[in-house]
Structures are given as structure tokens and as C-alpha cells.
Image 1: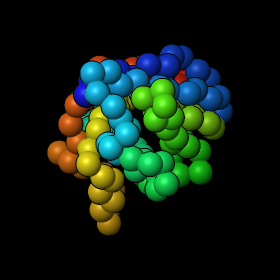
Image 2 (image 1 turned 90 degrees about the vertical axis):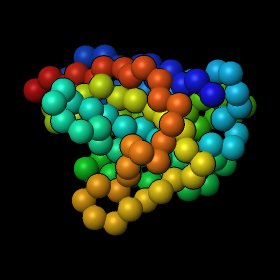
Image 3 (image 1 turned 180 degrees about the vertical axis):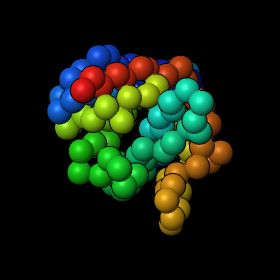
Image 4 (image 1 turned 60 degrees about the horizontal axis):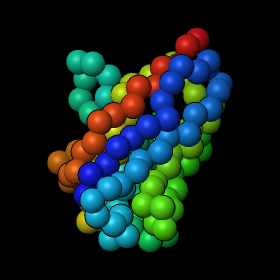
Length: 128
């Protein structure tokens, strides 16, 4: 499966954006979808993950309550609704696929190594 993230842009602090992750080449029905973000010079950070049927969702502590992950398998698309955006949310956002969501204890709940089919990211810039 090939994934493509879109929907990024420039927004003021407190604003909202909705990112989309579109799949091509294969169905998304059997894949968990994760959203990650990366700032230049820093490691890719997991943000959220949704199970293949959408029944389970997981969030990094820094975005819980502000971001909502969802999916529409009929459209082979996943979404990340981002509200109450902060300047520290500025990053390139990527989506990726996995067999299931792995939610680890500790400060980083997701690991990029668990995911594949990385697509090109979309830049989110939050101005103060």
C-alpha cells in the first residue's frame, strides 16, 4: 500500500487543521494507521494510531484531548483532526501503516520501526 498525507498548512495558534492519509495500491482495511511528526534535527515522534476497524485509538500525551484520529475504510483514507494547535505542533506530519497499533509505556508511546509504507509528509506550521 502507498500512503500520501495531505492537508497541512499555516495556521495561528489555537486554530485547527484536518490532515488526510490516502491509500492507493491496496486496501487499508487490514492495517492500523499511525500518524507521526518530525522536526528537522529531531527524531520522528508518534502522535496517534487507529486500529484497522477504527475501534481503538491511541494518542501521545502531548496531543490527547486536542487531536482526533479517524478513518473511512470505504474511502481508504484516514484523518487527523487537530484542534487547539500550538507552535510546538509545528512539524512535518507523516502517516504509515502497521498490522496493529503498538502502544508502549513510557514517554514515547509509538515507535516508527513498527510502521511501514511511509508516504511523503505534509508540513504543519503553527504561528504564535
